[in-house]
Length: 290
Image: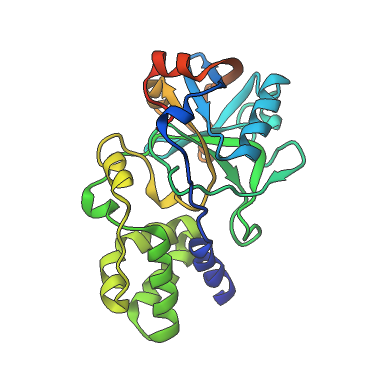
């Protein structure tokens, strides 16, 4: 069990690759691809980030090949996200459990500090930390964040600093009851429950270790206005953003689901890409490259 707790902490400790983007004018030069995700409940428009080149290239390749067409959003969780991209979902029988399929390969994680899980973020699904400590992404499965609006108290923390405080406390004060709370949360619900509990205990962890835990202002602004799901930050690769059609995410999360969070009524996707000048995308959808 201690091994799994260490892996959960390691999950929070992986270094974050910082983005060193150029000026806004530089970012809107050249062409890009506008991604359209069509469903029976509406369509979403998205861009993919140049700063996550492996994920962008892979997603565009699969989309152009028609890989995603007629696949299901097979996992839908209100206040969290909608997930799809499992090729086994195309002809799945009603009620069949989905989520294990893929193209037969994974993609190395591409964490960029300026990209995080605000509402509409496109992020790569992956296997859990205990079998995938390097956080490699699924070759085809992805999710789109719905999340919720958080308070400033909930979001005012840096996930990397939070992970460091947990590791420090375990090393310097192993008998501190906070360690037991975190261990119990992992035993109860695994990595995700562990991360949420860590966020809840952030103030106490900071007091116990002296480590300042503060989320960057840009993230606080997004999570307290548009919303999202901060416990996922630095855990899953964010490689794109919905720039039109956020209401479609909300609509999809209203459907009824079974115990595996699969919708009772199939929600299928059809994904197409269109190459166009970045300036044209900005003119139509706003400053999406900032």
